[in-house]
Image 1 (tube, rainbow, N blue to C red):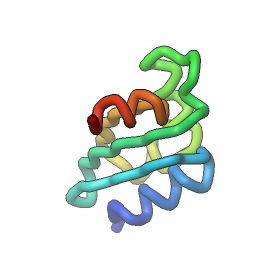
Image 2 (cartoon, rainbow, N blue to C red; image 1 turned 180 degrees about the vertical axis):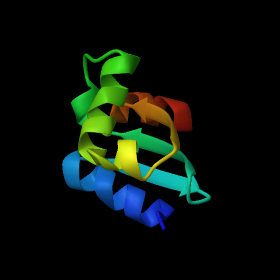
Image 3 (cartoon, rainbow, N blue to C red; image 1 turned 135 degrees about the vertical axis):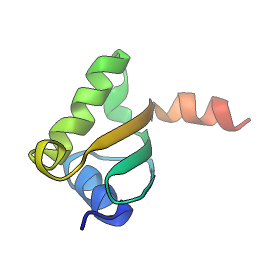
Length: 80
């Protein structure tokens, strides 16, 4: 069974993250991903980076993944 921790490990293994939170029920997950890799990327490009980090797991194990993808600057501004 896929767990939030296993999804988190998959993302962090393929993408350097400043902050990463994953919650979910085994099929549907929500993630907050903060990475410098998102600088200069639009939302679709950011999501593609996360999907690439997860690889085949997105097609085979994870039914749905909702994401907030932010740069460290955007994350800092949102926490103020």
